[in-house]
Image (cartoon, rainbow over the protein chains, first blue to last red):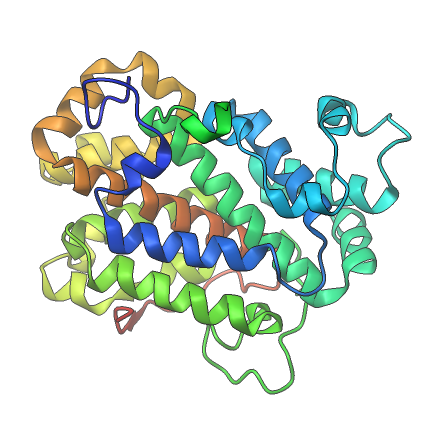
Length: 158
Length: 173
């Protein structure tokens, strides 16, 4: 039960709905990430889910972005995500982005040149900026979901 | 943190600290972020001082030099003067800041350091519920998400000076 609204479970969308103009702004910004030039939705979804795993954000973990599945992502790959560093099913590009994602969450000052350059070489500058902005949202709002004790949305569980 | 910027701004980005930064490589995202940030700051239910305290606490923990040295004008006009800002440190509990400001910092610290630990802090949740409305709690939490996320971008890209003068800048609107 979310401590903020009381009485029953609340999805993050239901919690954000108490601030409707802010919810609309967050959604508009977040949706743009999935069509930003320079980064593909599969890599983005893998990074979103890895960030959610690190935070134990159950609402974010239950969600799936349709853009990523339309582009070929499978549940089988998601199930192997925590082992991305050793799993040959993840490309060098995906690994570089996932490594950057983990450091972004834990300590961005620990991102060294090699880690950053691997991403920049793979995505280019616009793609790297899109990834960083996505990580800002994924990290920030996974934390927000945990803080507000958001439950998975009903449609995510269907 | 890298002393050299790992991504240079676009050549035509200008010299605004945000619009002239590496974020200019994604102009549609930058425009959407600016709209969102204006909504957060100027069309919200929480006072500017409360959000500014949270923003500055994040800036000091995340160590974003730009964020640490910027002051939004509306919060300053509401009374968040520099002598109060000086108390937003790790020793804030012993400072003369009022209890509401201390509560915001306590909540921000949990968000920034270990969000899962809030589940084991019923007193903090109860204090938040007694001082803020649900809409204000959601707004403060979303504000922290944006403050932290975009500070981390600046730290990740690098190239920030070690120190900067304090600057009063217009509140996003």
